[in-house]
Length: 500
Ligand code: FAD
Ligand code: SF4
Image (cartoon, protein in one colour):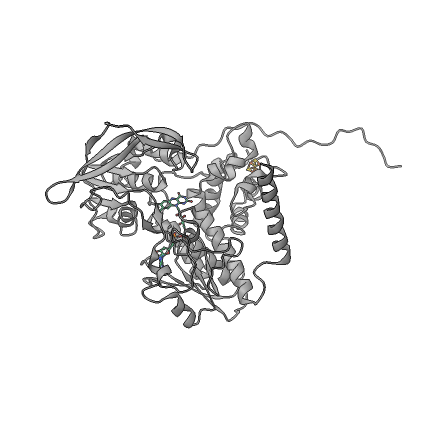
């Protein structure tokens, strides 16, 4: 007979309840006058303390919230054990840009939103820990180079060097493919380099990630505009066995109100590109002019509007952010809104521009706005803003920056035969394989989804690499198991819809 023990089963020791570890930041007044990074990152002790808050859940919900499924408890455990090299290696199994994602991913809407600790107290600061591991690697040297498979003798062309293109190229290079990225601009990185400002994402970090992909054997050809320098069809004729289109959605939208063609009206994209990519904020060291004047109006309430407003502030202007709904409906990350408020951006909420007025030389002088109130919810689920009659007023401004969204640039798509597009001009691609209507051509990232997030673009890059590999090896793009799982998920969704 086995010996019966009266001992109670051993329980995991309870973790002390610690508050979320604050991240050091430059004081608001200081940072409002410079372009240095706002958040300074955890030191070792802070990272160890924060990592110790993780419950190491058996069924970790955080992983379900991560669009690329990072093994979050595993990398946090390695940090807690004092092994950041192993933590970064674990992260890199799933994400190509941990230093970028740790800084700009909307974790509060993803992994941290589902963190089980968050039900009773503040969630584990997963993004900050990801950043810590990535910064540790940057300071201490790479924790090893991945294995690169023997050459498969096939060539893949990638259009665009944003997170989707660079991720796809890196994955394919590791599988043994020759990969060339064609980038329209003179620097690689996409929005990470031309859109997101230095004070949120230092550009040497983006360059490091691009250098890493080049070190895997990927060639990046800059100043190559596909659709002008060469068409997609010519890429195929020139020996690319498969093509991935990851050209983003960088064409700015405007409001179509009178005065938008005046001098001193920028799209947020142009304003940010001048400052970030062309380094206008370091004028005259860099010879790029940028007009900000004394008073700037930024129109919009998303991350891009926050970036434009905070950039204009740092260039010395008083900045009014004009948004037609209330603070609650703002699509920007909470952290960005909070930082903008702290730095002194003036929020004109429930306010909508009706026209921009100029002086005799055609330069912006005033912006006319109207007060709004919130009515019934619209198709987006948010309450519809309705103008309050007779509330028009004018604000004197020197510059207006329009940040009301972006769409697909038709330059590439118009010059490509046989490519199916949506009504908004985005490329149609199968959601499970990213294959387009054109043989051997795949597409992903913002050009398919419309403006989205870095992590989703990276996820698309990974998926495209998997599909391209299968395509080039003559295999079906989906395995029978994957087909079955997709069918089961779609049956379940149909059942749920019917039950409703
Ligand atoms: P992009 O990053 O747009 O890259 C596309 C690349 O293709 C560009 O380099 C472009 O020059 C190139 N290209 C275009 N046309 C051609 C052509 N014809 N030939 C050759 N090359 C071409 N997301 C977050 O997750 N967090 C944030 O905080 C955040 N902040 C943002 C702030 C700003 C100002 C902006 C604009 C976006 C922000 N986003 C943020 C969104 C995120 O950056 C994008 O969703 C993501 O970069 C999309 O990646 P992509 O690879 O699809 O395209
Ligand atoms: Fe840790 Fe939160 Fe993930 Fe649980 S859900 S493993 S507490 S990060």
